[in-house]
Length: 167
Image 1 (cartoon, one colour):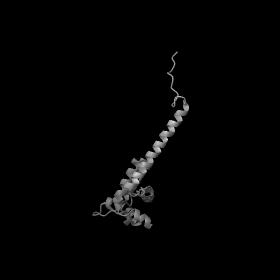
Image 2 (cartoon, one colour):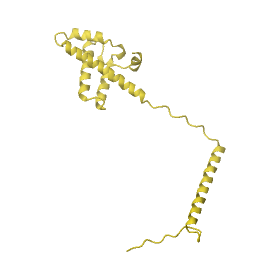
Image 3 (cartoon, one colour):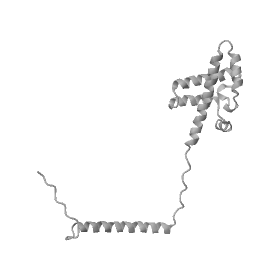
Image 4 (cartoon, helix red, strand yellow):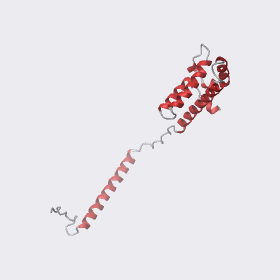
């Protein structure tokens, strides 16, 4: 649970609620599921928050879901069945699970540090590398000329192309 708490550090119920909307918009979850989960989250926290506590600002790491459910049950006695309250709790727990999975995926695809750049070459090393490239280019040109000369040895060059014939 410690690693889960670290992932949710400084995250609020409002952040969870907004994530559920974004997850539906991104296709992670269906719009219907998002609506059901957000309704449960809002019902639990909007009903159980005291007058001086805005439900969206509750830190997820400070949530005592058992106490919230007991308060919800007491405040909605006669209007909310035990089954409905159980569904709200299950949906809240599923919401938190999805939110944790989202953060875990973000950590697993976090960009890796770029490979270290090699130290800058000295001017002498640069000149040596340039010289090797020029020598290789010259050797290649000489090979090409020698290969072309073998195609038409009498003239010392390639066989002349004849113009295309027309019918």
